[in-house]
Image 1: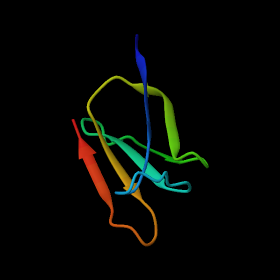
Image 2: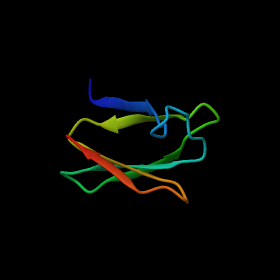
Image 3: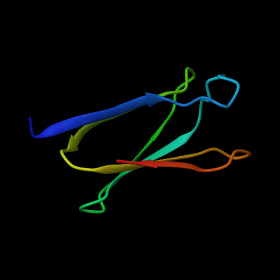
Length: 70
């Protein structure tokens, strides 16, 4: 495969899903960024990403920004 998918569900500390979260997916080797928004179930999916290492950042007004890499 030459492309991959990153997907997940964003929830708060009590387990409630969060719609409308901006999820920024950054390839740490190339700097390529893709942004997607979570749906009403807190789900996001970024398709056709070149293979590589990525960092994920999630932002929503009123919440602390969260980042995860590797």
